[in-house]
Image 1 (spheres, helix red, strand yellow):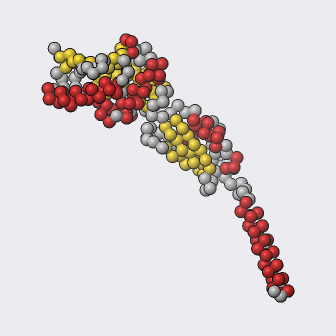
Image 2 (cartoon, one colour):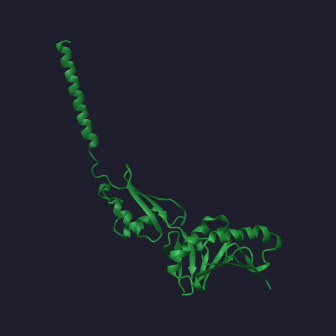
Length: 247
């Protein structure tokens, strides 16, 4: 190889090396003074319809003096935003992160109510699918079983909410159960939407099997003899259905 060729190769290598160094320096630099331009809110369910919007979430952050719009986006503490929004009694989970376009994206999972309680103590509250008490926000917008009687907060949040989750996830009973009455000893009565009778479960043990027996009784008996023949259907005991005729 001639001297000229070696010189040309050396110059070419130096130019390539200089380009790579320059490119690395340029592209590794963070934009200076990039401001947050907007908040994007994504709700992962429709429990409360349009309750959480960019405007409403922005108002929450403004009240906490954490409004990110107009601030240097690198200075925005997304973990602090998550913690602040997560204190809202209607929010189950929240994730905040920054987008390349200079926006704060907020993804919200809302709590899901399963029971509306009006107990003998005069208390009125909602219970969610995790066994937590929820505030009475937009409560009339939900199709929920109404719980009455001796339904203390302790019983509702430790035992009854699981029954509420089952009812909500079961298409038939979700449509059929209108009221749950807690009588003495934490025994359960159900007032159905169809049929003028009471379903007595007793204790909540084996409630799935008890309701399956009632469902079979509906299809095999009441569909033939009429839905108002009995005033009480008792499935407290295993493998038994005791019916009380209407007088």
